[in-house]
Length: 67
Image (cartoon, rainbow, N blue to C red; front, side, top):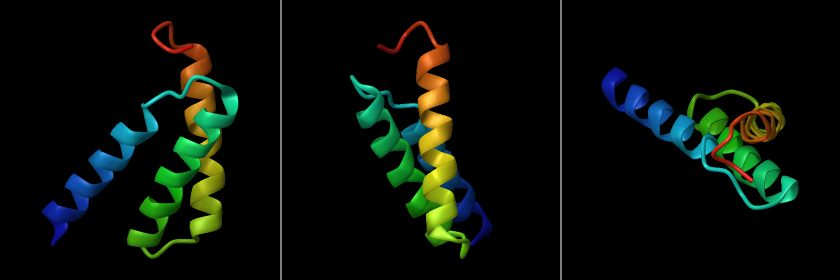
């Protein structure tokens, strides 16, 4: 059970690293990954979506490989 949870978390983190073309797309991708990750981990999906959206936008804006 713990291994599958770690694999899922790694998959969510990889999803967060996926940049969209615009800031809105980046927020949607990160928010979706954060909400799903929080739901699986029995946390607040709204909080997970907010953290995921902010994290993905910040990541995409600071990396040279993203738009």
